[in-house]
Length: 443
Ligand SMILES: Nc1nc2c(ncn2[C@@H]2O[C@H](COP(=O)(O)OP(=O)(O)O)[C@@H](O)[C@H]2O)c(=O)[nH]1
Ligand SMILES: [Mg+2]
Image: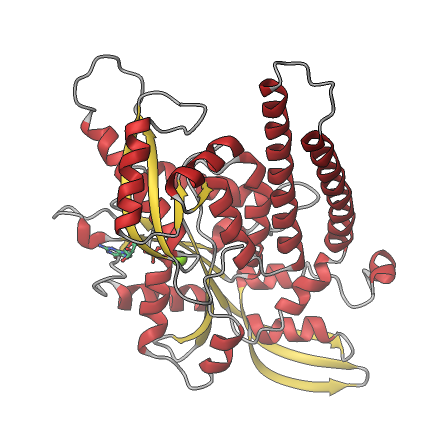
């Protein structure tokens, strides 16, 4: 773990960039340069989110993948000099490094080196909010460590000339480590299954939050955190301090109508997410399930903006699939798309909600759109609910405007003004007791 709590770590972000195979020594296509720069910006954004100070960034074109250091000899030397000049103590190499490459680079540069997967695991580890999320991240971490042990083991074997039967001390240590990791993986998987069975209960706890939730989703660097700060910074409410200390990524906002909502920042999507991290990433996205509005923040100026949008929608739709779905199937009706960084676009603005989280352009229109969404299609409905069914009563208080409540024996009659989508969702929630047989053992 990187300890960012003490003094900010001085970090460098190095992008070893493979040019698409073209042949010849002519200059790279302009699109390639732009893609490399976008990729570097993403890596810088990722690194910044673990609280380190980035003092050096560089793109190094890869001519070949050297097994010992990935980068070329001259590049390794040039980077060493740059790191020393800036007193860097952590180098993030935005690529997949073998354990051997990582170790050799650490030796050559005299700093701690982490690769892309290592960095992403750090971020997920910090941001996992639910028990399930934390377990998923730990599982990914262990699998990552395990493959690295295996790889360095085959490396040792190779060094011995292929006769790997003479179990040296290194090898048996690795066998032991591997077994410990395997045991831990089995234990975590078992715990995960248990947590999944009780997931309904956790979600119900989230639903006690008394205001509608607006969750910001989108790619890393789309501007989610900037927008979060722009929307919450201006009108911070006094009672916000409480929320801020509990969880810096959730804060109250006051909408133009006077309605209060909770804005929730989420872990960003990451381009080319390594497959072993997909489950962990989805687990960190779970809070989207409880959101009344899924505010999809897009970087309208990014070269891959359209592909990024498709990715985000694909992941969300996958979360709504199968028996283990974490998202209600009505999720598309809850998405509100916003095009950020419109200040970087020229005259021709794309259709849709164009904003700039940086300059504040379009933010009043965005707040009005959120307001409108929350108010859309309201109906007045009266429900009779057993007074003991605190979960459904709390749900109504969160998702609907309660107009009146009266006691009718053991039941409450609650009259609410409720959005049509919320009404459909509410009517699918099993009444108290309906799910007791399945969860009785987990309490
Ligand atoms: N030009 C411009 N830059 C922006 C805008 N919003 C965010 N940024 C920049 O984009 C980078 C990533 O923003 P951030 O909020 O951290 O993105 P996140 O990863 O989605 O949370 C930062 O350098 C921001 O200053 C915007 O509307 N216009
Ligand atoms: Mg952010």
